[in-house]
Length: 189
Image 1 (cartoon, rainbow, N blue to C red):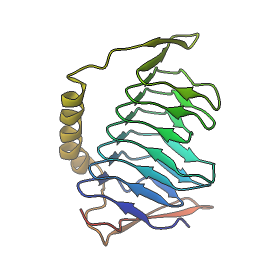
Image 2 (tube, rainbow, N blue to C red):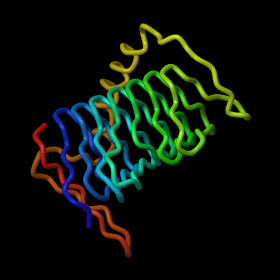
Image 3 (cartoon, rainbow, N blue to C red):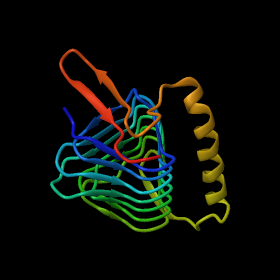
């Protein structure tokens, strides 16, 4: 049974998720159904306005805290380990951040690409293609406004089609025959 999780103001947390251990969800962050946030070693702390899509697994196997910055997007089916995820990163569909990798700011891990284990990815790095090529990008000035519109859309649509934790006292259960799980919202919206 996981510990309680802390959920920040204006966060949208769908009930059909799996959470283990100490997890702090920052203000405005959105967790889609079927994602897994597994703090099996140390805690996981999300910053503000992150988007975690369906079938994403974010896992902290280390005893140290996995810190995730602000305005990151974790797309469908990606897998993230690591020690630090900076701000405004995109981990695309089925991409993998492995080991104790540290990801800087404004990075893109392309679809089906992966990092090496235990590496430091500098700011503005893009990993792409069949051979996991790398290049440096220039940060886009309008990326922040696109991310804001994406968040607004999800805050409107997700509650219409999914069960979400609606207040600070609501607890939702998601269980399998062998592993009961409980998601409890402990901070005010």
